[in-house]
Amino acid sequence: MATLRLLGIETSCDETSAAVVHGTPDAITLESLVILSQDVHRLFGGVVPEIASRQHLTGIVPAVDAALNEAGVSMADIDAVAVTHAPGLVGALLVGTSYAKTLAFTHGKPVVPVHHMEGHLFATLLEHPNAAPPFTALLVSGGHTLLLDVPEWGTYRLLGQTRDDAVGEAFDKVAKLLGLPYPGGRPIEQLAATAESPEYGHPHHFARPMLRKRAVVTDADYYDCSFSGLKTAVLYAVREAEKTGTLDAQRASIARGFQDAVIDTLTEKVYRAAKAHRRGRIVLGGGVACNGALQIALRERFASRGGDVFAPTPRLSTDNAAMIAAAGLYRFGRSEFASPTLTATAALPIPGLS
Ligand code: KG4
Ligand code: ZN
Image: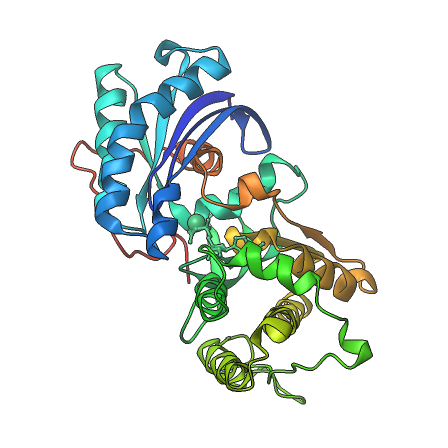
Protein backbone atom coordinates (compact mmCIF):
# COMPACT_ATOMS: atom_id res chain seq x y z
CA MET A 1 0.00 0.00 0.00
CA ALA A 2 1.32 3.45 -0.95
CA THR A 3 2.09 5.92 1.82
CA LEU A 4 -0.69 8.33 2.65
CA ARG A 5 -1.11 11.45 4.76
CA LEU A 6 -4.37 11.67 6.70
CA LEU A 7 -5.91 14.39 8.79
CA GLY A 8 -7.83 12.90 11.72
CA ILE A 9 -10.71 14.55 13.56
CA GLU A 10 -12.23 13.35 16.86
CA THR A 11 -15.16 15.00 18.67
CA SER A 12 -17.15 12.07 20.09
CA CYS A 13 -17.13 13.14 23.73
CA ASP A 14 -15.28 15.92 25.57
CA GLU A 15 -12.03 16.20 23.62
CA THR A 16 -11.77 18.30 20.46
CA SER A 17 -8.83 16.76 18.67
CA ALA A 18 -7.07 16.90 15.30
CA ALA A 19 -3.94 15.10 14.09
CA VAL A 20 -1.88 14.38 11.00
CA VAL A 21 -0.38 10.95 10.38
CA HIS A 22 1.72 9.71 7.48
CA GLY A 23 2.61 6.23 6.24
CA THR A 24 0.83 2.89 6.00
CA PRO A 25 -0.87 0.84 8.76
CA ASP A 26 2.42 -1.10 9.09
CA ALA A 27 4.60 2.00 9.50
CA ILE A 28 2.84 5.09 10.80
CA THR A 29 4.48 8.41 11.65
CA LEU A 30 2.59 10.83 13.86
CA GLU A 31 3.26 14.29 12.41
CA SER A 32 1.08 16.30 14.79
CA LEU A 33 -1.52 15.94 17.50
CA VAL A 34 -3.67 18.65 19.08
CA ILE A 35 -6.09 17.81 21.93
CA LEU A 36 -8.36 20.47 23.43
CA SER A 37 -9.75 18.91 26.62
CA GLN A 38 -13.00 20.40 27.83
CA ASP A 39 -12.31 21.04 31.52
CA VAL A 40 -15.69 22.72 32.02
CA HIS A 41 -17.38 19.33 32.61
CA ARG A 42 -15.50 18.93 35.90
CA LEU A 43 -17.85 21.53 37.34
CA PHE A 44 -20.79 19.21 36.68
CA GLY A 45 -19.19 15.90 37.65
CA GLY A 46 -19.77 14.44 34.19
CA VAL A 47 -19.99 15.36 30.52
CA VAL A 48 -22.89 17.71 29.68
CA PRO A 49 -23.73 16.89 26.02
CA GLU A 50 -25.01 20.34 25.04
CA ILE A 51 -21.94 22.08 26.44
CA ALA A 52 -19.67 19.52 24.76
CA SER A 53 -21.21 20.28 21.33
CA ARG A 54 -20.79 24.03 21.82
CA GLN A 55 -17.18 23.69 22.85
CA HIS A 56 -16.44 21.47 19.84
CA LEU A 57 -17.94 24.20 17.63
CA THR A 58 -15.52 26.80 18.94
CA GLY A 59 -12.56 24.41 19.13
CA ILE A 60 -12.69 22.47 15.89
CA VAL A 61 -11.31 25.11 13.48
CA PRO A 62 -8.34 26.16 15.66
CA ALA A 63 -7.58 22.51 16.48
CA VAL A 64 -7.46 21.48 12.81
CA ASP A 65 -5.44 24.58 11.83
CA ALA A 66 -2.96 23.91 14.63
CA ALA A 67 -2.59 20.25 13.64
CA LEU A 68 -1.87 21.18 10.01
CA ASN A 69 0.59 23.91 11.09
CA GLU A 70 2.37 21.66 13.56
CA ALA A 71 2.81 19.04 10.83
CA GLY A 72 4.01 21.76 8.42
CA VAL A 73 1.42 20.80 5.79
CA SER A 74 -1.65 22.29 4.12
CA MET A 75 -4.84 20.61 2.90
CA ALA A 76 -3.16 20.19 -0.49
CA ASP A 77 -0.78 17.65 1.15
CA ILE A 78 -3.59 15.67 2.77
CA ASP A 79 -4.92 12.53 1.00
CA ALA A 80 -8.09 12.15 3.09
CA VAL A 81 -9.86 13.29 6.23
CA ALA A 82 -10.61 10.54 8.77
CA VAL A 83 -13.36 11.39 11.22
CA THR A 84 -15.08 9.66 14.14
CA HIS A 85 -18.70 9.12 13.08
CA ALA A 86 -19.75 6.70 15.88
CA PRO A 87 -20.30 5.92 18.71
CA GLY A 88 -20.61 8.86 21.09
CA LEU A 89 -22.70 11.93 21.82
CA VAL A 90 -24.61 12.68 18.62
CA GLY A 91 -24.37 16.46 18.91
CA ALA A 92 -20.65 16.25 19.59
CA LEU A 93 -20.01 13.77 16.76
CA LEU A 94 -22.00 15.93 14.33
CA VAL A 95 -19.59 18.84 14.77
CA GLY A 96 -16.73 16.58 13.68
CA THR A 97 -18.50 14.88 10.78
CA SER A 98 -19.95 18.17 9.43
CA TYR A 99 -16.61 19.94 9.59
CA ALA A 100 -14.71 16.99 8.13
CA LYS A 101 -17.11 16.74 5.19
CA THR A 102 -17.06 20.47 4.48
CA LEU A 103 -13.27 20.70 4.69
CA ALA A 104 -12.63 17.56 2.66
CA PHE A 105 -15.18 18.15 -0.08
CA THR A 106 -14.07 21.80 -0.50
CA HIS A 107 -10.56 20.54 -1.19
CA GLY A 108 -11.69 17.60 -3.29
CA LYS A 109 -10.52 14.99 -0.76
CA PRO A 110 -12.32 11.85 0.43
CA VAL A 111 -13.69 11.38 3.93
CA VAL A 112 -12.95 8.12 5.78
CA PRO A 113 -15.48 7.38 8.55
CA VAL A 114 -13.88 5.76 11.60
CA HIS A 115 -15.47 3.93 14.53
CA HIS A 116 -14.19 5.44 17.78
CA MET A 117 -13.42 2.07 19.41
CA GLU A 118 -11.49 0.85 16.37
CA GLY A 119 -9.50 4.05 16.81
CA HIS A 120 -8.62 3.00 20.38
CA LEU A 121 -7.38 -0.33 18.98
CA PHE A 122 -4.97 1.50 16.65
CA ALA A 123 -3.70 4.00 19.28
CA THR A 124 -1.02 1.66 20.62
CA LEU A 125 0.34 1.04 17.12
CA LEU A 126 1.41 4.69 16.90
CA GLU A 127 3.98 4.07 19.64
CA HIS A 128 4.64 0.34 19.34
CA PRO A 129 4.88 -1.01 15.77
CA ASN A 130 4.65 -4.56 17.18
CA ALA A 131 1.19 -3.90 18.64
CA ALA A 132 -0.29 -5.42 15.48
CA PRO A 133 -2.54 -8.47 15.05
CA PRO A 134 -2.87 -11.19 16.00
CA PHE A 135 -3.51 -10.06 19.59
CA THR A 136 -5.93 -10.09 22.49
CA ALA A 137 -7.41 -6.64 23.07
CA LEU A 138 -8.87 -5.06 26.16
CA LEU A 139 -10.71 -1.83 25.39
CA VAL A 140 -11.60 -0.02 28.59
CA SER A 141 -13.05 3.48 28.49
CA GLY A 142 -15.78 5.56 30.06
CA GLY A 143 -18.42 3.93 27.88
CA HIS A 144 -17.01 0.53 26.90
CA THR A 145 -15.44 -2.61 28.32
CA LEU A 146 -14.63 -4.98 25.48
CA LEU A 147 -12.50 -8.11 25.44
CA LEU A 148 -11.65 -8.97 21.84
CA ASP A 149 -9.67 -11.50 19.91
CA VAL A 150 -8.09 -9.78 16.90
CA PRO A 151 -6.65 -12.25 14.35
CA GLU A 152 -6.18 -9.43 11.81
CA TRP A 153 -7.16 -5.77 11.43
CA GLY A 154 -10.85 -5.52 10.64
CA THR A 155 -11.78 -8.87 12.25
CA TYR A 156 -12.86 -8.40 15.85
CA ARG A 157 -14.22 -11.36 17.77
CA LEU A 158 -16.13 -10.25 20.82
CA LEU A 159 -15.28 -12.58 23.71
CA GLY A 160 -16.59 -10.63 26.65
CA GLN A 161 -17.97 -7.31 27.80
CA THR A 162 -19.45 -5.69 30.86
CA ARG A 163 -22.95 -6.67 31.89
CA ASP A 164 -23.57 -3.26 33.48
CA ASP A 165 -21.16 -0.34 34.07
CA ALA A 166 -18.12 0.22 31.88
CA VAL A 167 -14.83 0.14 33.80
CA GLY A 168 -14.18 3.88 33.38
CA GLU A 169 -17.74 4.62 34.45
CA ALA A 170 -17.17 2.54 37.62
CA PHE A 171 -13.97 4.50 38.35
CA ASP A 172 -15.87 7.78 37.86
CA LYS A 173 -18.81 6.73 40.06
CA VAL A 174 -16.58 5.40 42.85
CA ALA A 175 -14.53 8.60 42.71
CA LYS A 176 -17.74 10.55 43.24
CA LEU A 177 -18.65 8.38 46.25
CA LEU A 178 -15.20 9.09 47.69
CA GLY A 179 -15.46 12.83 47.06
CA LEU A 180 -12.78 12.84 44.37
CA PRO A 181 -12.87 14.99 41.20
CA TYR A 182 -14.21 13.96 37.78
CA PRO A 183 -12.97 12.12 35.76
CA GLY A 184 -12.15 9.78 38.61
CA GLY A 185 -9.74 7.23 37.12
CA ARG A 186 -6.51 9.09 37.74
CA PRO A 187 -7.43 10.44 41.20
CA ILE A 188 -8.36 6.90 42.30
CA GLU A 189 -5.11 5.48 40.93
CA GLN A 190 -3.10 8.16 42.73
CA LEU A 191 -4.97 7.72 46.02
CA ALA A 192 -4.80 3.91 45.81
CA ALA A 193 -1.02 4.13 45.40
CA THR A 194 -0.80 5.74 48.85
CA ALA A 195 -2.77 2.97 50.57
CA GLU A 196 -1.01 0.42 52.63
CA SER A 197 -0.21 -2.74 50.71
CA PRO A 198 -2.67 -5.67 51.03
CA GLU A 199 0.12 -7.92 52.34
CA TYR A 200 0.21 -5.86 55.54
CA GLY A 201 -3.40 -6.22 56.51
CA HIS A 202 -4.98 -3.93 53.95
CA PRO A 203 -8.49 -3.42 55.39
CA HIS A 204 -10.67 -3.33 52.28
CA HIS A 205 -11.19 -6.45 50.30
CA PHE A 206 -14.15 -6.38 47.93
CA ALA A 207 -15.53 -9.48 46.24
CA ARG A 208 -14.19 -9.97 42.70
CA PRO A 209 -17.12 -9.74 40.30
CA MET A 210 -17.64 -12.67 37.90
CA LEU A 211 -14.49 -14.39 39.09
CA ARG A 212 -15.25 -17.88 40.27
CA LYS A 213 -12.53 -20.42 40.84
CA ARG A 214 -12.80 -23.50 38.61
CA ALA A 215 -14.49 -21.48 35.86
CA VAL A 216 -14.72 -23.22 32.48
CA VAL A 217 -14.94 -21.68 29.04
CA THR A 218 -18.54 -22.78 28.57
CA ASP A 219 -19.63 -20.64 31.56
CA ALA A 220 -21.73 -17.68 30.42
CA ASP A 221 -19.58 -15.30 32.47
CA TYR A 222 -16.18 -16.80 31.61
CA TYR A 223 -15.10 -13.62 29.80
CA ASP A 224 -17.78 -11.12 30.88
CA CYS A 225 -17.39 -8.55 33.64
CA SER A 226 -19.76 -6.74 36.00
CA PHE A 227 -18.93 -3.70 38.10
CA SER A 228 -22.19 -2.44 39.55
CA GLY A 229 -22.13 -4.84 42.53
CA LEU A 230 -18.59 -3.70 43.32
CA LYS A 231 -19.75 -0.09 43.15
CA THR A 232 -22.52 -0.89 45.66
CA ALA A 233 -20.00 -2.62 47.95
CA VAL A 234 -17.91 0.57 47.85
CA LEU A 235 -21.03 2.61 48.65
CA TYR A 236 -21.65 0.51 51.80
CA ALA A 237 -17.99 0.82 52.84
CA VAL A 238 -18.17 4.60 52.43
CA ARG A 239 -21.43 4.79 54.45
CA GLU A 240 -19.90 2.66 57.21
CA ALA A 241 -16.80 4.87 57.33
CA GLU A 242 -18.97 7.99 57.43
CA LYS A 243 -20.97 6.56 60.32
CA THR A 244 -17.80 6.06 62.35
CA GLY A 245 -16.30 9.37 61.20
CA THR A 246 -13.31 7.57 59.66
CA LEU A 247 -13.78 8.22 55.93
CA ASP A 248 -10.71 10.46 55.72
CA ALA A 249 -8.57 7.70 57.22
CA GLN A 250 -10.13 4.99 55.05
CA ARG A 251 -10.50 6.78 51.72
CA ALA A 252 -7.20 5.52 50.32
CA SER A 253 -7.75 1.90 51.35
CA ILE A 254 -11.25 1.90 49.88
CA ALA A 255 -9.86 3.29 46.61
CA ARG A 256 -7.15 0.66 46.68
CA GLY A 257 -9.62 -2.14 47.43
CA PHE A 258 -11.83 -1.08 44.54
CA GLN A 259 -8.94 -0.77 42.09
CA ASP A 260 -7.48 -4.13 43.16
CA ALA A 261 -10.83 -5.85 42.57
CA VAL A 262 -11.19 -4.29 39.10
CA ILE A 263 -7.62 -5.16 38.15
CA ASP A 264 -7.86 -8.77 39.39
CA THR A 265 -11.01 -9.28 37.35
CA LEU A 266 -9.69 -7.71 34.16
CA THR A 267 -6.32 -9.45 34.43
CA GLU A 268 -7.92 -12.87 34.81
CA LYS A 269 -10.33 -12.32 31.89
CA VAL A 270 -7.55 -11.11 29.59
CA TYR A 271 -5.37 -14.04 30.63
CA ARG A 272 -8.17 -16.51 29.86
CA ALA A 273 -8.73 -14.92 26.43
CA ALA A 274 -5.06 -14.87 25.44
CA LYS A 275 -4.54 -18.45 26.60
CA ALA A 276 -7.63 -19.82 24.82
CA HIS A 277 -6.63 -18.16 21.52
CA ARG A 278 -2.88 -18.70 21.97
CA ARG A 279 -2.06 -15.01 21.62
CA GLY A 280 1.37 -13.76 22.65
CA ARG A 281 0.46 -10.08 22.36
CA ILE A 282 -1.97 -8.11 24.50
CA VAL A 283 -3.06 -4.65 23.39
CA LEU A 284 -4.79 -2.23 25.76
CA GLY A 285 -6.85 0.74 24.66
CA GLY A 286 -9.19 3.39 26.06
CA GLY A 287 -8.84 5.89 28.90
CA VAL A 288 -8.51 3.25 31.64
CA ALA A 289 -5.60 1.63 29.75
CA CYS A 290 -3.22 4.26 31.11
CA ASN A 291 -3.77 2.93 34.66
CA GLY A 292 -0.23 1.96 35.67
CA ALA A 293 -1.34 -0.62 38.25
CA LEU A 294 -3.43 -2.41 35.59
CA GLN A 295 -0.48 -2.48 33.19
CA ILE A 296 1.87 -3.82 35.88
CA ALA A 297 -0.62 -6.54 36.92
CA LEU A 298 -1.06 -7.68 33.31
CA ARG A 299 2.70 -7.69 32.65
CA GLU A 300 3.29 -9.75 35.81
CA ARG A 301 0.54 -12.19 34.89
CA PHE A 302 1.93 -12.72 31.39
CA ALA A 303 5.62 -12.71 32.36
CA SER A 304 5.74 -16.49 32.83
CA ARG A 305 3.98 -17.15 29.49
CA GLY A 306 6.23 -14.71 27.64
CA GLY A 307 3.31 -12.52 26.57
CA ASP A 308 3.95 -8.91 25.54
CA VAL A 309 1.57 -6.30 26.93
CA PHE A 310 1.30 -3.08 24.90
CA ALA A 311 -0.39 0.04 26.23
CA PRO A 312 -0.48 3.56 24.84
CA THR A 313 0.92 6.49 26.83
CA PRO A 314 -1.76 8.62 28.56
CA ARG A 315 -1.88 11.15 25.71
CA LEU A 316 -2.81 8.42 23.23
CA SER A 317 -4.94 6.27 25.55
CA THR A 318 -7.54 8.97 26.17
CA ASP A 319 -9.59 10.26 23.25
CA ASN A 320 -7.43 11.71 20.48
CA ALA A 321 -7.48 12.19 16.72
CA ALA A 322 -4.16 10.44 16.06
CA MET A 323 -5.76 7.05 16.67
CA ILE A 324 -8.66 8.01 14.38
CA ALA A 325 -6.23 8.94 11.59
CA ALA A 326 -4.30 5.70 12.16
CA ALA A 327 -7.45 3.57 11.88
CA GLY A 328 -8.39 5.76 8.89
CA LEU A 329 -5.21 4.66 7.08
CA TYR A 330 -6.41 1.07 7.35
CA ARG A 331 -9.98 1.87 6.24
CA PHE A 332 -8.62 4.01 3.35
CA GLY A 333 -6.66 0.94 2.21
CA ARG A 334 -10.01 -0.84 1.89
CA SER A 335 -11.45 2.12 -0.06
CA GLU A 336 -14.06 2.77 2.60
CA PHE A 337 -15.04 6.34 1.84
CA ALA A 338 -18.01 8.30 3.11
CA SER A 339 -20.81 9.55 0.92
CA PRO A 340 -21.86 13.20 1.31
CA THR A 341 -24.77 11.95 3.44
CA LEU A 342 -22.46 10.62 6.18
CA THR A 343 -23.96 11.40 9.56
CA ALA A 344 -23.24 10.73 13.22
CA THR A 345 -24.48 7.62 15.02
CA ALA A 346 -24.74 7.37 18.82
CA ALA A 347 -24.41 3.58 19.07
CA LEU A 348 -22.88 1.23 16.50
CA PRO A 349 -20.88 -2.01 16.76
CA ILE A 350 -17.25 -1.90 15.57
CA PRO A 351 -17.16 -2.87 11.87
CA GLY A 352 -15.98 -6.45 11.58
CA LEU A 353 -17.26 -7.41 15.04
CA SER A 354 -18.62 -10.91 15.39
O1 KG4 B 1 -11.36 6.65 26.33
P1 KG4 B 1 -11.71 7.80 27.20
O2 KG4 B 1 -10.81 9.01 27.20
O3 KG4 B 1 -13.15 8.35 26.87
C1 KG4 B 1 -14.18 7.50 26.48
O4 KG4 B 1 -14.25 7.16 25.27
O5 KG4 B 1 -14.95 7.13 27.40
O6 KG4 B 1 -11.85 7.22 28.69
C2 KG4 B 1 -12.19 8.02 29.79
C3 KG4 B 1 -12.24 7.17 31.04
C4 KG4 B 1 -12.81 7.89 32.26
O7 KG4 B 1 -13.82 7.10 32.83
C5 KG4 B 1 -11.61 8.01 33.19
O8 KG4 B 1 -11.95 8.02 34.55
C6 KG4 B 1 -10.79 6.80 32.82
O9 KG4 B 1 -10.92 6.72 31.41
N1 KG4 B 1 -9.38 6.92 33.21
C7 KG4 B 1 -8.76 6.10 34.08
C8 KG4 B 1 -7.44 6.59 34.24
N2 KG4 B 1 -7.31 7.68 33.44
C9 KG4 B 1 -8.49 7.87 32.81
N3 KG4 B 1 -9.21 5.01 34.75
C10 KG4 B 1 -8.35 4.39 35.58
N4 KG4 B 1 -7.08 4.81 35.79
C11 KG4 B 1 -6.58 5.89 35.15
N5 KG4 B 1 -5.32 6.29 35.36
ZN1 ZN C 1 -12.67 6.80 23.93
